Structures are given as structure tokens and as C-alpha cells.
Length: 298
Image (tube, rainbow, N blue to C red; front, side, top):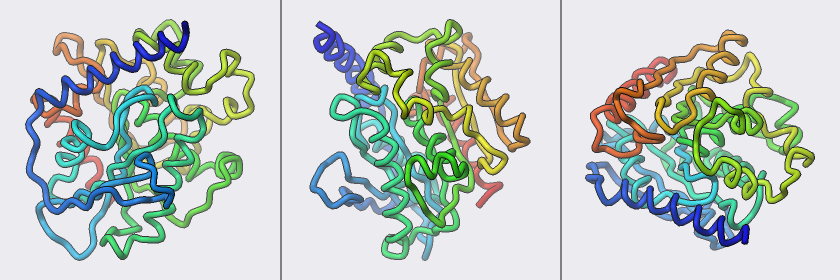
């Protein structure tokens, strides 16, 4: 019964993404290199695209973009291809990634895939004209969690040891849109979003997930240090995670980390991750704010 319910949940999430795609207009971009394997196992889940800006350069600052979808659906293609093309703008190369989904394998595999992307870029930056000294991270919804968690792993020795991750690279700044930042607080009464329980149960694959060892090492909010990078936070008040955004803001303030917060008022009638679609004028405003914020750290 639970598997059938999860299947229905997955179909609902997929339908929402597809509707966004069908009503979206693909933007212009520069060169796109498709389906680069960052782990050489032939899996589509371990492929990425690099989308270059219209303006050519010898070396590009770059953004790793991590798609949302409740950890369970979506890929780097279709609506997320369009979004990544907009994110490239006239300056950034965008590394638009796939990763293994929770309907295939449980957490923390999604994080280890993101970390593998970082190691791949570290070892192949010259080949793809990427500036290792100017890495940025971006994600929406579950992708925002993974982007922020990756930065925690980069900057907190407790997590880098637990995830067995080493790199000489650092993140210059982070953009998190409509994100989850702690699974316990995500399940709290101040987050009003359908399917929360199902998303988390599928991710961890155990109804007693709070007792799992990995759960102790899964919170962004608990593992932010003073070395966490400057962060742009966006959310909306309708069917999204405003309370999570405010908790992240508090954690950043406590550590004296520069940030910008923009929560769209409910009167604007914008739903969760509206920004990935180009049909809203507010989506362009979020991109503009992201570019302006990142520009201070290139």
C-alpha cells in the first residue's frame, strides 16, 4: 500500500514539473556540453551538462545547480535545463547535474553524488574552462538542502570526516530557493506543505529514520560554522518553507555570515519554487538578486 502511495506522490511531483516545462519559453544560451559522466559507470544519474554564457571567456566562474523534486523526481533536463540557461546569464558557466533519486537509493547517496561532482570539477576544471577559485552553489527545494548541506560538508570538519570528503575547493557564495534545512524542523507545525512525511520516509527508507546514524549528520542548521559562505535565501509564503528560510537566517546571523533574504508575500500568489519558471516577472527579479549577490564574491 505504501509503495502505491509513494508512486502516486511521485507522479504528482512529476506532473507539476512537466506543467512548468510546457508553459516555459526556453531562453538563449551559449555553448552546451551535454551528458558528461562525473562518475564513469554509464548511469544517467551520474551525468551533468555544462551550460556556458553568451559572452565567451577563457575561464568562467561557475554555478553548480542542484534540481529539486522532493529528492525523488526530476532531472537536469526540461524545466531545469531552461532554468540553468537563465542562471548562466552573461557571466557564469552552469554545471547542471543529475544525481541518484530517493526512489532508487536512500540518503546519504544523494549527497555523495553532489560531492563527487565537486571532485570531478576539481580534477577537470581546465578541460572545461572553469575557474576553480570561483565556485558557487545553487538549488531549489530539496536541491537547496543539498547545496547548503554540501557547503556544511566543505566547511565543517565533523561532516567532512563523516562523509569522508576532501577537496581544496571552496564555495564563494550560495543561493537557496524554497529550501529544507533540517528534517526535524521541516516536519514541524509551522511548515505547511503536502507530502512532507512521505518525502522524508522515502529519502531515509526507514520509519524510524531519526534513529539512523546518518540522521545525526543530516542537518544544515546544526552544522553551520563561522566559515559557511555568504548566502542568498528566497522563499514564498504560499505552500512553501518560509519557516525554514527564517531558521536559516537566524543560524547565519548567529555566526555573523553575510546573507540576503527575500520572502515573497502571499498577496503575490507565488507557489513553491515558482522561480524555476520564466513566466513570472518575479523569477527575473530572483535571478537579478542572485547575480547581484554573487557579484560581491567573484
